[in-house]
Amino acid sequence: MKDQLLELEKRGNDEISAINDPSDLEPFRIKYLGKKGALTSLMKSLGKLSREERPEAGKLANQIKVNLSRRFQEVKTSIEAGKSGGATSVDVTLPGRVPLYGHLHPITQVIKEVCLIFSRMGFRVVKGPNVELDYYNFEALNLPKDHPARDMQDTFYISENVVLRTHTSPIQVRVMETRQPPVSVIAPGKVYRRDSDVSHTPMFHQVEGLLVDRDVSFGELKGTLTRFIHQMFGSDTRLRFRPSFFPFTEPSAEVDIQCVMCGGKGCRTCSRTGWLEILGSGMVDPEVYGFVDYDPDVYSGFAFGMGIERIAMLKYGIDDIQLFFKNDMRFLSQF
Image (cartoon, rainbow, N blue to C red; front, side, top):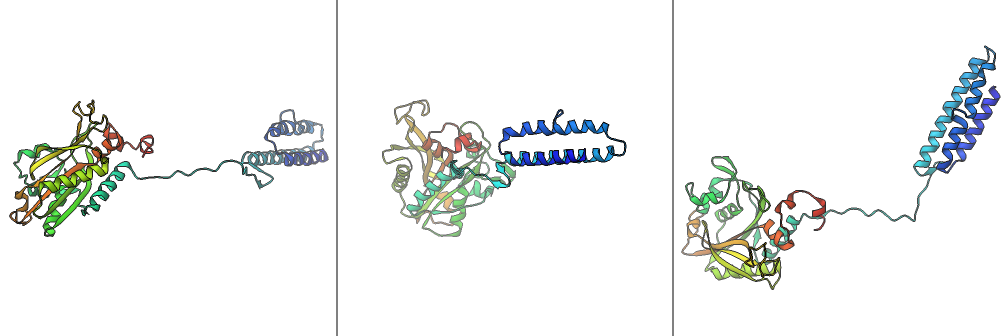
C-alpha cells in the first residue's frame, strides 16, 4: 500500500508539472483528487490493511492528498497569472496602455488667457484676500453702510465688519493705498454671493481692472476693452457700450457683445436682441480717490470687471454655470 501511494504521488506531480493549458486542470483534479479519483480509491482500500499498518498508511495518504492539492493550486494560480514553470509570459504584440494626462480646468484656462491679454497691454496681475473688511469691500468703493446699492450684492457676512468679498474691486483700493499713479493692474480671484441657479453659483471668479494716470479718458477705456474683446472672441466680434450705474464709477457703462449663439440675429439665449452682456466698466468716481489720497484734479482713471464663468460660457457655448463645479469628467475632458 505504501509503495502504491508513493507511486501515485510521483505520477501526480509529474503530470501537474507538465500542464500548461488551463483546460487540463479540471481533468487532473478529477483523476487524482476527485470523489472517484485514484487517491480516493486507494484510501478506500485502507480497511483491508491490518490494524497495525492502517494508521501509518492513512497518515501517508492524507499527506499525499495535501501535497497534490497544494501543487494543483500553485499551478492553477501560475497559469491564471500568465505564468508557467516560473517563467513570465508577455504578449509583445498587444498594444501599449496609453496613460491619462491631466489638464487645466476650463475656468483656469480662461483666467490665464484673460490675464495674458491684459498683461500684453501693460497691466500687472495682483491678488488680495478672499475674506475682506467691510471698509475695502464697500466703504472705500463709495458704498457707505446705508447705501442702497449694497442690496445689489447678496453678501456673506462673517461678522459686522468682515465679509467674504463680493467682487475683486477691494484689491484696487489696496493697490492705490500703497502706490502713486501711474497704476495699471488686473485682479483675478474668487468672489462670493448668496445666489445659486443655472446662471449663478455662491462662489465664482472675477477679473477686475484698474488704470489711473494723468489725463486718462473714456476713449482709452473703450479702446482697451475693444482690444480685449477682439482678442478673446475674434476680431470680427461686434460690441457696444450702454449707459449704466456702478457706485464706484461715473460715468458707467455695460459692455455687450453680439450673441455668440446666433451671430447677432436674435435667439432665445440673447432674448431675441442679438446682444449679450459681458462686463461692467466706467471712469473711477472722484469720491474713491479721497480714500486713497489721490488728487482728483490731477489724476483720472477707469475700472472694469467681468465674471470669468460668463466669459467661459460665451466662449465655449455653455448654458449651465454649475457644470464648471460638478467635476464631471465627461464635461471637463472636452477642454
